[in-house]
Image: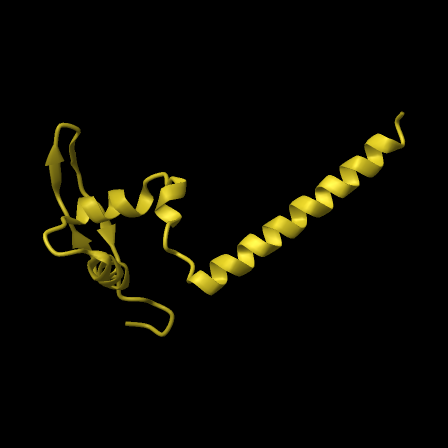
Length: 95
């Protein structure tokens, strides 16, 4: 292969369910990354669905360590207090 040409190793996965079959080709690197995300007993389709679904706030539970959570909570409290003071100053000038 020439200097700027790149070898693309394609992995094909055929998925059949109620919605039919789709074939996709991905690079070997993408396949290895997807495979590394795969949990025991999980299909590649399930990995893709898990990684691309809309996330709710409960998916964030446990993402921060207790000290990190305390720092975030403290900063949120400071911002709320600052916002409240600014709102009071603004409202006070209207009366």
